[in-house]
Image (cartoon, rainbow, N blue to C red; front, side, top):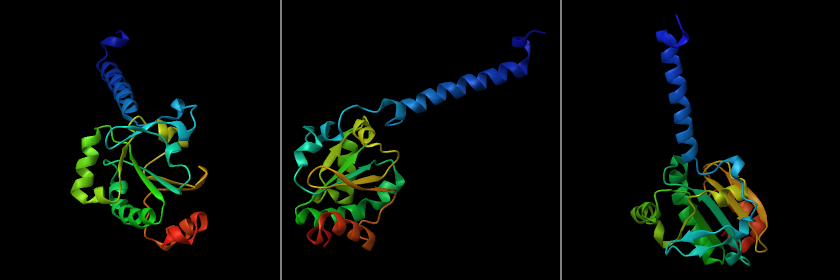
Length: 184
């Protein structure tokens, strides 16, 4: 009997084909991949604001900056967004900038609806970068990831995972890197 006439061989071959097709579909949906890292400096990678204007990190130089890479489909991101919102209110009142950069591919409306539903639109501006190029440029490997950047544009701290933005640990890091004024 030939290889293709055996029922078991056909079933196994079918599963292998379906597996690789599924892997290809999944890979296309991953917001960033290690092999596609951009040669551009992170400060030059464009993303968009809520009016869909192109923005770069260079526009925020001169102020302490907190970048938070997140997405509405990320359960940990969603769980910790309330504490980021309250942190942003205080941090920005003292002259800092918080950029919550959504990686959602569903478009601006998905993020706008989420912000409005949760009352985040008062303290956090909407930023969107669904291609993952900015996250790639920073070497982000998962969400949420927060990056603290000093006024000169240098990364001074990286926080990965669910962060309680109101914790004493975060306040200590903010004070250490940005001074007492920003940690209140």
